[in-house]
Length: 279
Image (cartoon, rainbow, N blue to C red; front, side):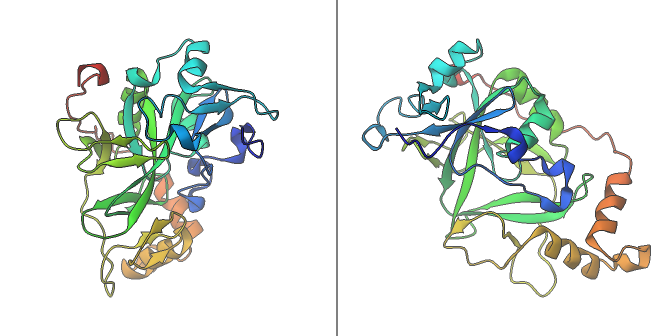
């Protein structure tokens, strides 16, 4: 057992909603189960990777001594839905951040998050949301890089709450596969129950740039797009959209102005949700 990993308080991974200019937020280095505001790492043994049931057999570290339960045993002990009863939803922005999950679902929530990669993808910025930060979009099939993602396994109630929270996106089937850290491959396509939130808006391609801006805080192997951090991106928004004429000259001012705007109340479109068991 890897004893260099141990449970951590959720406060180590704060929600970007609390500090918008730190979006997309700090993520754990491994998959984890979030339970009662504690982030418990998930470890996979090399000999089990890619085997049948390998993801569910991930070892959830319970304490600093390395005691563990498998993911399903841990979920069973908390009397919540097992892994195979949940909807795998790709998180590529702030949704793999424990604090952001708490802000959406509450302190008592229990959610497994398993890390993975998506081939020919990258995570890029779009324009500023009502929370005051330039938010993430994923481009798929337009690049040769491999984007890092976190697959959140949500029960039905959590999925409904997630849909409600994602006002800039609609729920869709993932068009591409995800290779999990367990070695399991989750298949994309309309015949498979792997989901992703796709943006309503056309992805922003700034004037003078060859393509979208990659999110510097999120690593993608083989990235060729130019990358900026949140503050640099907000500064670029101010420049390209002449926000100085509205009295906005700094990222802090811009962030506060957008957060102060009233919500439009626009509802998110969604596809029909199928139970994983019926797929």
